[in-house]
Image 1 (tube, one colour):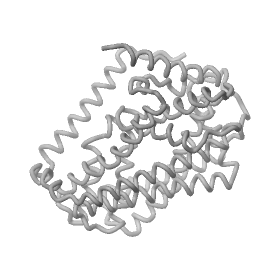
Image 2 (image 1 turned 30 degrees about the vertical axis):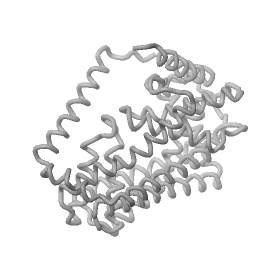
Image 3 (image 1 turned 90 degrees about the horizontal axis):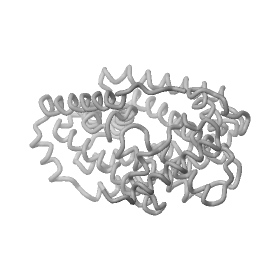
Image 4 (image 1 turned 90 degrees about the vertical axis):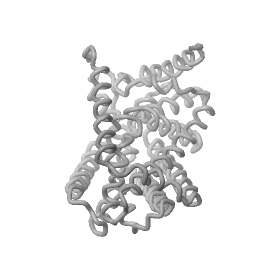
Length: 360
């Protein structure tokens, strides 16, 4: 059993606040003329904003389909419906947008597990298997990521500081995919009982990677993830037009890559400030004024957040859940054995519902 060091949450909070303060200070004192940033919103073409929102929504839909493809290889039938998976996936996006850390990854597992239990599914390790599918689903992002890195390296004007970073990310991604393929387990090949916290996480991930043993399913999951990235790339591109930025498609691809690098480690909700800097810096190579680039960074983040938060809130209400429940998600390492993990997920949601009804 691992004991937490007293005061660690306060220490983490202090580090997050200090990091955010440094980023805000740098943007304020070393950033652009903020009057030009605010005035950049005056000329926004809203029909391009609507198009960007539509592409982001399509991206969410196909990514949810990719996750369901992975799920079907990790658990026994009956499988959750497309709408149920989309609902859980949307709630996870909402949690990632409004809470620090990757709470949303566990939130979507907890929501989906709870719904399957309410539909009469037996407690047969679904919680642990679904945690593994989240890891596998994210792993398939490596396919479009590596393709996008190659496209950017060949076509985009890349700042010198970004070239080595993209090469390192691509190499790590290729290595992770190769390791995952070699270590993937067949469905129900082993159990989690008696394993330590780290080995439990590894085992759950390996169960989720069972999709790699089904070439057609793996190809389908990779295809849908690539479609999701393509729609997101188109959203970045048309959002540029909304801010009267006429940079070519390679610039949009570079922005998309650096956006994902900036949000890889969510230090605070949205990584606001850090994300705008990551978006604005590559656009300077294309002659985009600093004020316009920063305004575009805020606008692009608002576009993505509006889809994640809006759709997520809708499905949060549809599932009869509340924001308080999302903050009480059990950690993946708590799934010591499948049945216990599911019980903890259900208990966390029920406890959150009870607390949410208490006035004050």
